[in-house]
Length: 362
Length: 166
Image (cartoon, rainbow over all chains, first blue to last red; front, top):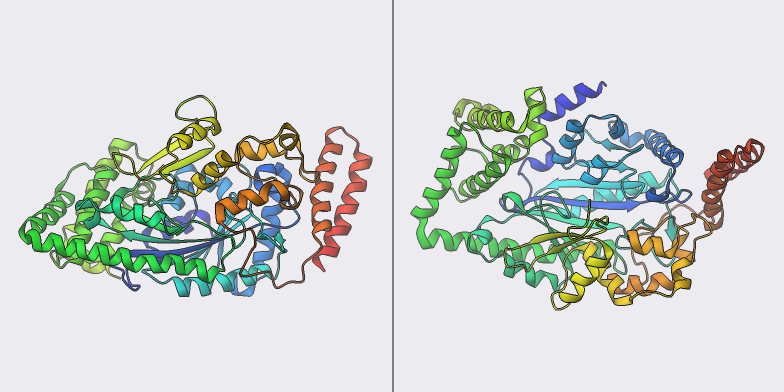
């Protein structure tokens, strides 16, 4: 399949994880698990020559091709892509910013439902990722464990009897497992409790990061909750650490929402409705402002204060109004100022026309 | 990316959750990361890179001998590892075992893997390390235009790769 077709097709729809169907999906956007793996007979990426990187990429591609269960998977050569296409994959959470921005032979294998991807030559030779909608860690783990077994049946991983799966950075060694639950916590932000809540999390070995991973800003009131350590506990134990914390956060967020409703439902209703009004009628709007108002609207929909928009449309708009998505959907490169105008048009088109909203549900 | 306080590359990206203006991300070189963490020692850093930076601070500067110790397989020195926070090859975990173990204990509060392990019968770690070493030697031979040596090494690599794939 042609690369451009692949991308246009991807741009028009959204991944499984964005459908807003999983458990607790009013607050939990997605459950993601990734495993870091390396080939035993090559140096880690930073120490690789160009030839090494090429050999690693070729070896992994050839081995993935041999696995019958993965024959629907598409491999994308990230080195060949334009900047906007790379950015597009980052916005979709299919690759990391690090993979997009680095140099040399590298790529990503993506399954058609976008439930899993395998990054090649990121910080480690392989980064296997599975993403499910809502709070669904157990199924995500089963899927990734199976994928890992399939890949391991064709590749010899770097493994040490004492230290486990070996990784370029010692913070990932052992299981190589990172569990990330992405949560939408607007009421904790409004009630200024978010810092207090996260401070308490540090005591229990869980770390919190923004929408696009470590070092990213907390935009749109999205927060990722992850395990901090990877060595000395089993994968299931590490997952439990995170899944014990998530229900507490859900509970805090629900209570904060309830508090806002009880304190003044009229004010809250006014606030979320105005946010929808701005998104529907603005003539130019930045990505940051869009995230800010979409976050309010999303909470309004979940609290039943806004009933004319479905939550999966809001979920999709968070991603589709990002710079690279907007340019792919409009089919042309746009400068920042033109993007703000196109973004406003796009929002108007998808939020103001009830007929359109219905058809978007498919 | 440069350190936000000087011209050196930023190798530590620390997320500070308890700032006066909410969460803040710091991009620092090793030196400034040390200074920052020494000052903030009462507030545990929440990010994963922060855990590593904190550990490097705790262990202090190792002896010159340790700093210069080099992996015979990939050639990385312990000094280079400390500067970048990234190891060079799987064999480093064996070669720098003594230096890494206390670091791992501080990051993970453990030094032994529990959990999943590969199902395949493990290929000997030695032959895997030899492959990494031979590829490096081959590239060096090509660089000094010693093609005869390079082709000898290539044959040896193929031989080993075939044994590994069996």
